[in-house]
Image (cartoon, one colour):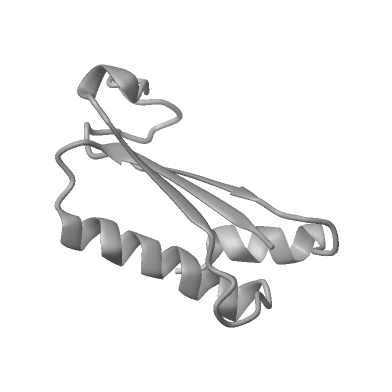
Length: 90
């Protein structure tokens, strides 16, 4: 049972939160062979000062207050290759 934690800005519209949740779940189904209905997620909304990131950018990547942090906790049994494929899924 993987557990997804999604942290985002408090003012993120509900429709966007739903879409993000579904994209994460769909990637789990199609890439990591997660069984249907194995959808456990914790979604947290944060005030602007609670999501800390390099506003000036880092390694050539620019960030905005709309940043989303996604953390997946996997149980044993998924290879490094599967985990890498999950995070490169588009």
